[in-house]
Image (cartoon, helix red, strand yellow):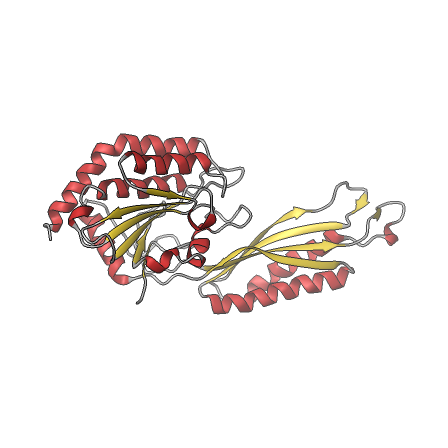
Length: 333
């Protein structure tokens, strides 16, 4: 096997040569944000950079039009296989507040640089374009769809990074997460002329919102429950006959999250009963399991960053975790 330090130097040199192109791409994606499953241009630009370097790219991975898989083969062009994960969707109305333009571009940059040395390595590398990670679009959760399609069954380890206010590599787990929408239906009436004839669906949403606000005091500190009102009526002088609300629920592990979800649903059922409304609800996105970070990979990442002169913390100065595929994980055979 070739000298590892020499291979690392060549990879760094390749990144330096492509730096201006990568920065330009990240800036363009930031200036042209696209929400989940609509990242047509971002996906095209990122996959196009790989294709231009002669790397085979499969579009539409796991049935998602804006997903892709690029394969970089080593001497055995097989296992072990490492996946580098690329995100590139934006938040509605805000844009790239979470820096997915940087995640996607960095993953492609890593793939481009590694393509110059991977023929000298055992195993192979995939760059996976994973759309709809902001959980704002219908049927979001690109990595979950890939898991369900068996894509990660052929992967031994996966890595990605997420922008933040500090450079930290920790054993913190991403939170398990599930998303729900609750729909309340009542009966419309004139709010001044005949209020007694109405059944106020907005009252049910408000009751649910307040009930969950109280529930937050009685759950573990790792739990996060946050939501937005999707619909609350059409006019102030009409008692709303329909109202809806969306919630994300998160916890450090999926088993406890299931308990929290039962209590959230009970709050919704109580709100419907108290107001006389009917209730329908659904999970609007596939659920995320909590991640299980791999210490070996995290230590390697820390070592490599520090060798480049980057100051790396192993404890976060600011707490706060999201829900996604981990920065580094290892599949146990």
